Length: 195
Image (tube, rainbow, N blue to C red):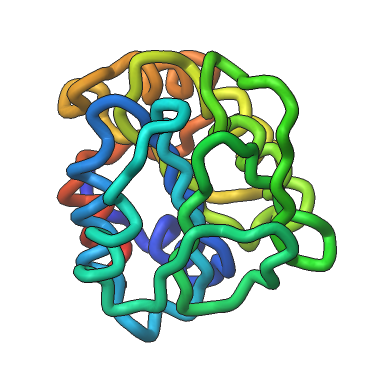
């Protein structure tokens, strides 16, 4: 499916981009980080499932290949445009009404902390139609319900094509509950991010 004028218009009016993924999503999200222009004029929050207490080089690798400022979320960080934020392991990342992050230590959701659902759900109430969210590959349905809430609150919602995803369960769960307005392959998603 080609990118139509509606998706492009919605994308350009967004102030926040959410990227969620788990198993099999790293390559696509890493590609996105590399193509973001330095003048994206949005804040980006990446929520990737990571093993508990597993030291990760994700932040370092992403930062070395991003043309935007990139950092791991800290509690009470104010959300700034043209910045890529990565949700830290062992916490849920929430967005508060004054547009800052808070970190939460409550129980894992779908065996995951950070939970994509938790982050998506909190963003849906604050950013509403000024948000774009993309759900990538993953082996469980985390993120699908959050994507649905985003869609119901006016956000632009996208699922990676399950045919292309290494682990199709996560985007397929979103499609099954009609949470994704668009189903795109990675090439189309990256094209959108550069418009």
